[in-house]
Amino acid sequence: MHPLVHPLVHPLAHALARLGLSVVVVILGLGCGGAAEVGEACTERGSAKECVDGAVCDSVEGKGDVCLKLCDDDADCGADEACNGISGASGKACQPKSK
Image (cartoon, rainbow, N blue to C red):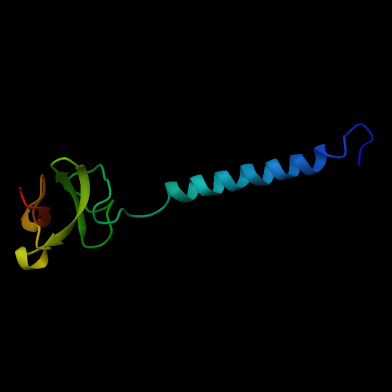
């Protein structure tokens, strides 16, 4: 070790460097985390490319744009959902029923 470097600086510098690298890895991992699950936010209404397979991005009142499960009819959806048209695209998705 260099005589002008305090003995505690060297381990501390390594610890901070490891912490910084860990934060960068986590941030990159979140940014490349893959497709949004059903119910998670998306930005391209009418597109399926942001969502998991079998889902599409559409507007939901009170929630904004989220990924919704694709459907053919109401039987494909939950009890509190209805199979309705998708904004700006052909096909249908399970939308929450109006209350």
